[in-house]
Image (cartoon, rainbow, N blue to C red; front, side, top):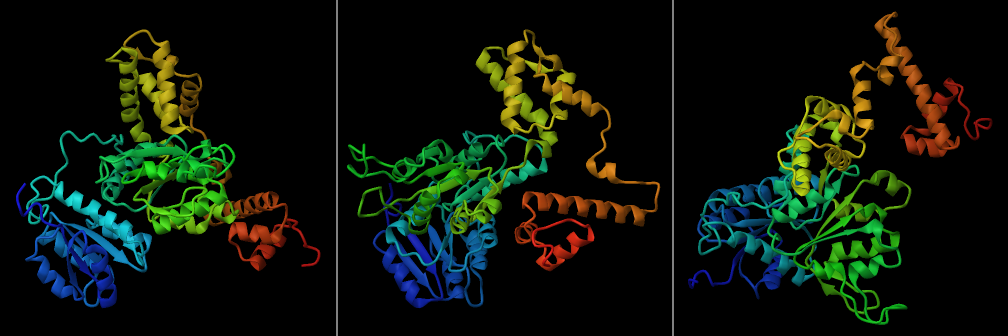
Length: 483
């Protein structure tokens, strides 16, 4: 290794708060060669001469924004990594920074030096792992291209919806920020989490997955955070938690919506402070873990019902990936089905199988409420029944061909059933809106037991307007006689 290569990594910090700038320097100086700049223009000139590994850039600067500096850094030193910093973070701001090429996005204040050192160290490792990285870990080197031996999980599909998912994975992979993956059961949330891990700087560090809904409420805190000997009945020895096991890597919290409220409080502190305190311990310790959470729970409803903390939701979701249901990307079904058939047939020792036209037509006509997982089960079922090289529709589960037969005949949608084309458009429109409004209000009052206040909160309709609408449709509600 050359003498230049073994020098301290060079880190630039740009912030217009000179007191904070000195604090940054003190926190980083023991591990890095730190260059600090209070002026954005001075920093841009320095970027053109200094060989940097990492630049920490305040988002809000006089005269220039941190994103302007990021763009300049990408041009003059494409091998350096950038970490954006702000005291007023928003999801949109984080996404814009990551889309522009930032490695990470941190929110001030950052009071834990060890946590900051680890985040910067990961960025340095990423910079120095680029192909062709020079003395400064890739300064003035070309950007890394994807390795032909890339082992990342494949997100299969040709739809625009799944193309967006792949693009977000590419943008978010190198971040250490918490990431929330939402989608119906069976849409592939863990696959996306593994793709984020495999495509980022933590790829060589642990990936640990845990289903929050599968652990008893009395045990989940011990599993996540660990416990000391004697912390509770049966704690005969010290236990290391999953956060410690995932240190430096990724912890995937599946079904986060099922986490009990008391554990949500402890998880919030870990995300805020970067510290874990085992059950029964008196001291906390620092961990560096990227948390990726997944759920099929409607968070808005869960927060409204008091089942999930709003502050934890925002800590979990600075980055978010929403997975589409399979019924919303029907063009992906043939591609996914062929890949699943290939996987199942290899396991069964019967490679080279294909689908008949009738089988593929049945597969693409069915709505797949269980998404990709249900599709996989159906194909495995058909493979077990078949004896030849072609999977036919008759070998699929009975509900799949049945839906195909039903799909062959036009079926009126609920909206179509309401439309009367024998009257002028304006009248048909008014009649349809009136019928919809009445039906909505009747169902609204049914699910709220006729409670006007609850119905107003649930629907988002002003209480006085809701009362007027109910009277207009002669729908009863609690307290109507006194209103």
